[in-house]
Image: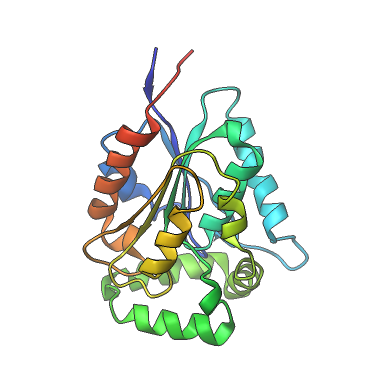
Length: 234
């Protein structure tokens, strides 16, 4: 039998597995879905725990290997977790059938702390205030120290290096008002893999996955149907 590809999402920095759930419910062409929380990405990260790229890649690969020898999955990342899923696809391409990168980081023109802060302020004006209680709850669970440690590690990672080695189809998606992931940056990222495309949806900022899941779902569903195809089945 054949069927839609499984989709595995890694929430963005400090965010819980709750964030992609609305998107999952709206996907028309996805197989089984799952959200994976990691230290700094929804889970606390105690002092002394390794939270750099190498350690996080190993953790995500452990999860994927735990699924058994089934078909490769589509990995979906948001913000800083885009760097993580891209590196996994580059390191073990046989496990990844496609990549969806929502608001990827970090644009090298804005990787410094002042640069990131300025871009976040410019984007925050376009975010929906109604999401603040949920974000604060997630951030409290992950912990501000864990978030800052993870951000400090990942802001230095160059997603370009990973995407240059990726061979699966890649969708790079951003909200219209996302200043953290500007349009020229996402377009440049989409040109790195041999089968990449960039889309700016008609609304939203950096949290477009949370605030406008319907717009994101429409683009992801089209990507899964046209570019990724079905699983081979067993």
